[in-house]
Image 1 (tube, helix red, strand yellow):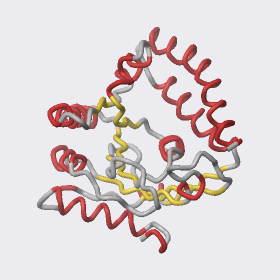
Image 2 (image 1 turned 30 degrees about the vertical axis):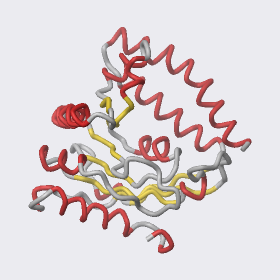
Image 3 (image 1 turned 90 degrees about the horizontal axis):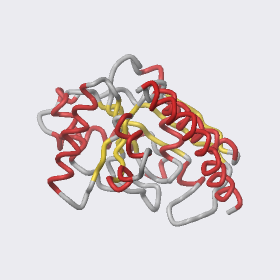
Length: 234
């Protein structure tokens, strides 16, 4: 429990200078890159502060000049602050629409091309996918957790179909990403964070054009993510 309190306190305190410096610079320059790098850097620093080592595997399989849709398994609240900072290029993510109402924060997230999402409203969810398609066409990556929520036992949950329609519509390659170790470090339903190693495995990109339907693409991506999990979670 102490580690959880420590990392949350660190992120809370660090958010002040990140906000003051990053948002001020973004407001003056109209560029979000400094704010983004500061934000993801603080996220990863908090993870390492509580004794978590991060290993990256397979990054050499990717051409980081290209635009990708990264699809990751989701087992822990630590997944985003671990996987996003190890990507050398900026990525967008889906964010609850309520956060866009927060003054300054909402403005900064819009400038960073983050995508508001409301899963309770089908029409709003479809609009979010169209917005995400525009983000990808602008050259910004997308990182998506296709399960839509954290797995309670480390095994893959059913995937939502929306992200695969997005990939088929845009033709942007999908990079399956397998996260290993975060379930043991901070599992869903627990407040205590444990020491350990988190491994981010970038699988080879998958071309959506090679599949006749979003459903078949979904099966291929799911299998690729599953293949990187320890046997007990397969």
